[in-house]
Length: 175
Image 1 (cartoon, helix red, strand yellow):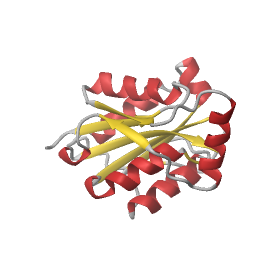
Image 2: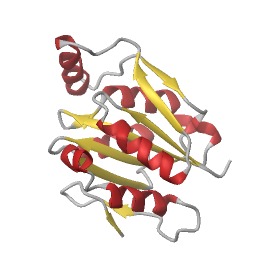
Image 3: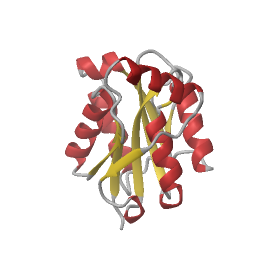
């Protein structure tokens, strides 16, 4: 199939908002990764920290189309403790063989996006074809909308823009 699938994991809802906007604007289907055990309460935050620091692969549930049926899969996940959120790490490990072409979007409070993007590349065994990072405040105030939609446009077949560069600040800029 020559289409694009959006897959997200979101603990607080920030990443989900970006995924829903990208998906609805471009008409792409949306799959969601969720925890099999809720992270609510004080122990949930501790689990987030431990999953990140120890690079654990927590148990997940995926609801959505089969990623292997899509030409490109856009993964959206938060950054925890300067690392990729554990549930997305689990998703990549479980579906690695189905993820032929991958683009990645990370959301973060202040930093760590380049670390998370590097982790995705290591898990996949190849660099993503495009990547971008957005700060939580940009998502909250909507100032990232233009960059997000441009990111999606660059992924469309025939767009002529096969790559978006991510400089040290973790913010995507078209190549």
